[in-house]
Image (cartoon, rainbow, N blue to C red; front, side, top):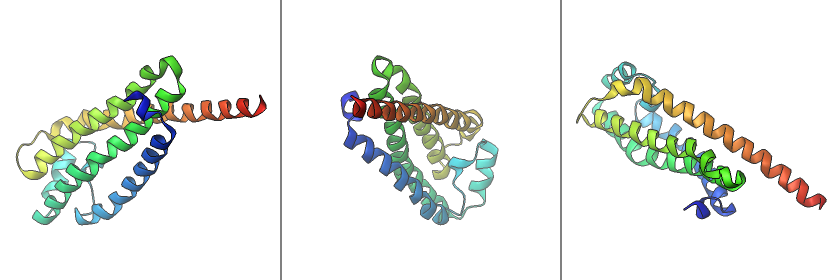
Length: 162
């Protein structure tokens, strides 16, 4: 898997996919009532947003979470992991861990939200720590990816000089 993620075409595809999926949320946000609970950092806040939704909006939000927001962490997390694996050498797996953790936490958050949106179960209180954890892990993983870009540029300059 590591060799696959660090291939140039795969990195470019994941980069483009995360942008396209991110833009797609704007379209789905309107169908889901204007606010996605993925952006709400507390369980109480998420409950308030869900309470204000119509049945159609809850259904749209459920499917947005289950389908669209399941693809998103794979795209951005895979990109972060691939960049770390490719440009951090023997420390690549260590540098890739925040990206992997972000995927796991985002899927966990999506599961909690899908359960609440479907009316199956309310575990939204975990959003109080789960959502900030997701954002902080994504921030760390994105900084690592930016460092990887700097490493890539330095390597490119060195190669041209040689």
